[in-house]
Length: 271
Ligand SMILES: Cc1cc2nc3c(=O)[nH]c(=O)nc-3n(C[C@H](O)[C@H](O)[C@H](O)COP(=O)(O)O)c2cc1C
Image 1 (cartoon, helix red, strand yellow):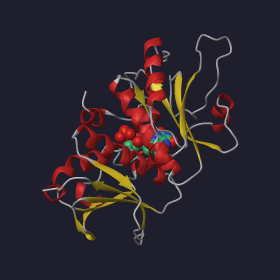
Image 2 (cartoon, rainbow, N blue to C red):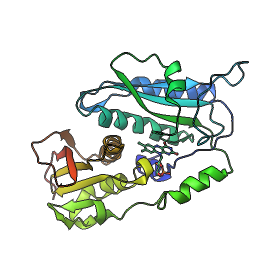
Image 3 (tube, rainbow, N blue to C red):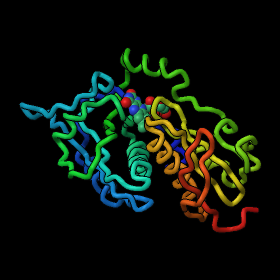
Image 4 (cartoon, rainbow, N blue to C red):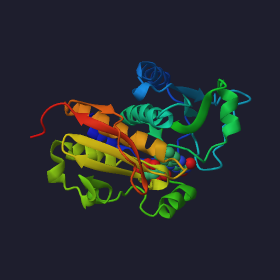
């Protein structure tokens, strides 16, 4: 499956069948994790946790009722540092997309999980942080009441702001058109579809022909993580389209409401 199709198909899944992952799926996920390379020199790792449903005393991993029927979880662990959360989120989303391709459900969880339960299963080093987990498993057919409630409460859940609302051309007062974005219109469209905490889509992009500058809101919430997910979608799409470029932190000022994060530098002439 192409990464573009995978990104278009991915949805947060909060209801699972109650089955544990098959051995084949466990092995594939473990293998994929072992090959992941974290970008921007970030130190991060992902652990697959099984609750061993058949164990007389199964491991308890609380999600306050938000997730049901999940027997396996992915936990994102990273060390503090420059772009730590952003880089860690970028590798976690690569894995989420891989699981989607395998037909598995996932759901980024930043708030709806019991940290103590998860930390008991992960041997965190003193400089390591756990901020995100995701169930991973076989999606259940029926949506539970709480799930339909989240989707409704999250007004535009599954929907995203239009292209021109978050993407700008050379100046934050000029909305970017797909025509001006040229070959980057598809990578940017994939950014638009990226999941974010409460679907806030806190990223802003300033496109300046060969340069694509990424910004995020100043909020204390999850925006550093959300922008990492957006960067993953952009990067994976560029790779699939054979668009050569690289990420670099440039000397750029923040904007009134937005913090500069990183830029993508196109390697070849755009037109
Ligand atoms: C960083 C982050 C944290 C999230 N935390 C939660 C959470 O605690 N509980 C939850 O039910 N969904 C959580 N979500 C899922 C979002 O609500 C969901 O991705 C967003 O509404 C878009 O919907 P979609 O993933 O189906 O496209 C989180 C998503 C992200 C990216």
